[in-house]
Image (tube, rainbow, N blue to C red; front, side, top):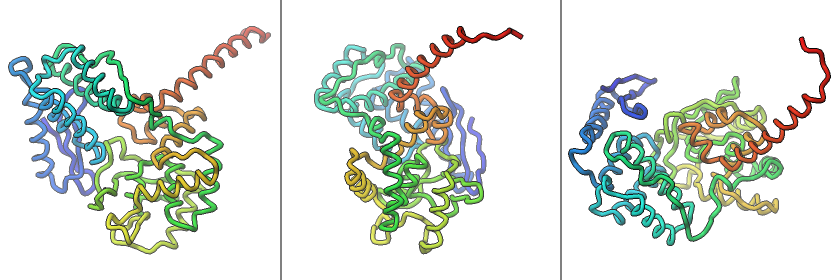
Length: 369
């Protein structure tokens, strides 16, 4: 049974489902939310009688995306659709009930012989999540993705590992301040580094999202920078968040707001000559790459600044729970998965600190209370 809630000027529905409720907002009227919720409930009912009807792999995956991934942004949705197309090409006519571990591993081996390991990993992550839901619903009994071995043509560096270290970040931040008057793009890079926001979140910011009294930024929307069609929802519900920003950065933007002219959508990072209305990802990456090259630092992308932000916080012993909330991750499991390399290094350091702690306790001479 769906429930409905008004949030500001829009409506949100919540449909009961396992392993977690399905929520989506942004509907102008309650009626629109009710119609959308009814469609989700219909899809869920399709698989209420497991075992009675065999279901093709691609059909189940498509329905799973429609039901459980209906609140993700278009960029992420395209990635799932790519996985769906791969399933159609390789498992045409195959029932999800009949796929074995051996068959799935053979598929991964063949796919990995033609793609980078990073691509294989993403594909397997999508399929594994879908398969686990099928098990939860009783559609299948065996997780054919369990312990799957991932291979790839080239051991490419994972995106989350492409980040700057602390000293490189210091050099970059200071250089960005020196170049800020050249283009508003440098302001975007400064905020990307100090906030950890996604690019679509950055270009979707408006002046009203900045609270200079509390040094906070509200993130509750993104801008479709690929098509320029306008505002859209965030990647997921936890991505709607309010984050604290350092005083220096907030002061920089307070001064900027006195200089930039107003525009139709009250956007900050506008590009009047661009049909997509905002600074492009390509432009941001271009000036970032040039700046890092000038500093003799190996370039990263604008998304790499998000990983840099998170990695620095973790290295500085900021709670992983806070980092997860600040980044707007769907769950802490996502954070642990993305930054396992950082967590592993910190765990080794914690191990040494633990050994030293108890060794020092032996040498302390004190009278027990």
